[in-house]
Length: 393
Length: 59
Image 1 (cartoon, chains in turn orange, blue):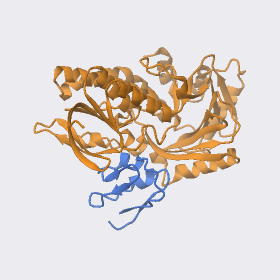
Image 2 (image 1 turned 90 degrees about the vertical axis):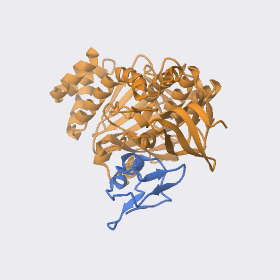
Image 3 (image 1 turned 45 degrees about the horizontal axis):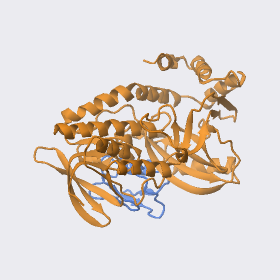
Image 4 (image 1 turned 90 degrees about the horizontal axis):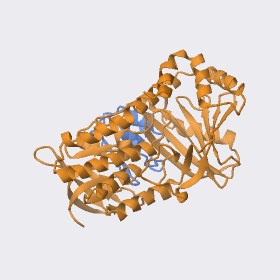
């Protein structure tokens, strides 16, 4: 294997593959390193993705899609089910195992070299403070590999950034502590996602039920760190599944952490860029992170290839990535964060009240806009954010 | 110090993301805490989704 690369990407999830792929498209020599044995496994994700926000550069393939969603059901603490039907598709539940693997294969076809079981445990740094390579263990052998740019796509842990002096440590109000089970042998609608809200289901978070097809679903929950305690997510999920799906079989069980921060722009240094969960790009309200991670990877990859062409790997040059990313993501992420903070103050009574009012609207006329109106009536402090949401500024 | 119930761990990295002194190392299926660097703050214990970590009073 070569020991000199233009770009080394650490992490082979969607952010990493997009960064690697777009760097290679721009002519850079690219190595992508994945610590696990297989790209796409284990799936630490609810796998729900908005179809409108999906990167336009990629055509969604049928084999990536488990189910197509056109309904959302909110279930309130008193078990009222507020269903909202949409005229068009609003998203998909993906098969991340196939999807992540295919993205990596696209990158590979564009010239990216990929190694799995490749654990990066340190960075190489030049005398003038530029990150210029990685220390990596690949299948048991140690290597020091040189690069012009390192892209940290190492997920929620974000240790690559820390090694480069970027403080990525998450505060307790900025981490979702999550567990998810794939529950099989259950009878659920395959075109509807269910969200259970209220502290009797889970305090400081929510429960999701995402249909996977074949009588199965991703059923999971997240609790913000400051409301959680050791093993609490596991305990609440067990209780929920026992009460709601007592006859289901658990065919997969994973834990995971989801960054739930406000917009972060401290994501570059000389010779290094962070993307995806490592750059805290996930939506702090929903915890969804696939689209944002891919967009950040795409932008960073393009910027990396430009840097290689210009032979300038300085923080000043890489700031182009932050500039474009800020324009794309800052407002929506800040807005999601404010709504998240607001939602944390809602009580069981608030949710029950909102559900009751929403159910008074006939199903044909019920919409997210109308439910927002009810929420504002209940909590006028939200009005500023809702106006901004619909006015689009 | 922090003790790890190794057979329970799912290697998800949630603990790593909140560690203020970056003393937790996570491999594909192995987790190690550097007790020299650990300040026994307990954030990793609180945030672990599965309850894998336990805090002892003694450092």
